[in-house]
Amino acid sequence: MKCAIYGAGAMGTVLGAYIAKAGRQVDLINRNEKHIAALKERGAHIVGTVDFVQKVNALLPSEMSGKYDVILLMTKQRENAQIVSFLKEYLAEDGALCTCQNGLPEPKVADIIGADRTLGCAIAWGATFRGEGVSELTSEPSALTFSLGAFGKGNRLQDVKELLGCMGSVTVEENFIGARWSKLLINSAFSGLSTVTGGTFGEVSEKKAPRRVAQSIIKECIDVAKAAGICVEPVQGHRIDKLFDYKGWLKKKISYMLIPVAMKKHARLISSMLQDLKKGKKCEIDFINGVVCEYGEKYGVPTPFNRKTVEIVHGIEEGKYPVSFENIRLYDGLFKK
Image (cartoon, rainbow, N blue to C red; front, side, top):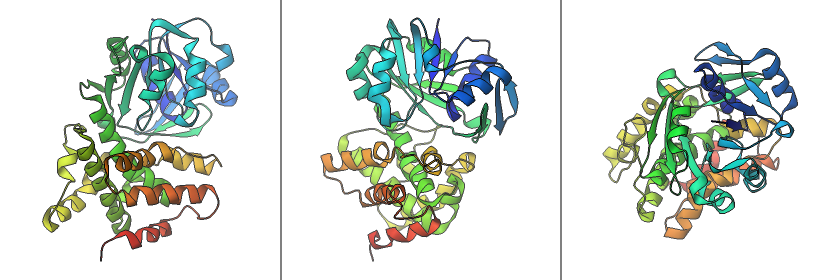
């Protein structure tokens, strides 16, 4: 079976190293020439909650050849139309492209390559790029989980499950949109606020003011999912939609207190969107918090905290705001007196 990780940056390098460590063949493909050169010369160095070096097969896109049975797509969504159209020429007719991206990218991918060749994966761990050939795994080894699903009949579903299983536990979700939504809920709150503040997920969840905003973002995501008829799937065995939903003051207080506990295994994570901003790039906030806003508008559910997050991040991109915890004050007017 011929396999590739396209967009082998922070997370793709970690995943590729684990797959190669398990003795499986996989091509790590990235447009960053220095990163690919380092991977070829020294292998992938994975640091953080683990520490190992693994020889890998690394390629530039210009070095690709032949047809792949499985391509794991780990680029940002902003360029999906262009990238998926390019990869279509390298995908076997009975192959599968699995989107390991945030948000809900599968419908647009399926429009390009067909539903049967479209798989999706929600990843519950994080990584940070530390330099050419080096990636930091920022989640605990016990939190290395994947939620996998098919958009059509599911070409190569079992093959992809086995590949991902080289790194962690894989759940094949019958209700894949529910699994996607549970990851979207977490990303909207913690990736969004990590980008707004410059903090880690742990700092966002432990500091009182950003935690209060995170709680409101989570609540909006749950309300939108209810209105859309989406059953949010558990994350690592926990029904987050039940834990963090509330009506009365007591349940609201409990959900507030649970947030840092829920984020304990992911406390070191920073948002990949924040990493993009630090590099002077635009990020994919429209595909995360923006998706919640789109669904909210469609199903008549207000999403002021998600919308404000999108607004602030675009403001940071435009130089209107610095990345700072002071940005949390921009949400103050949204809380009911």
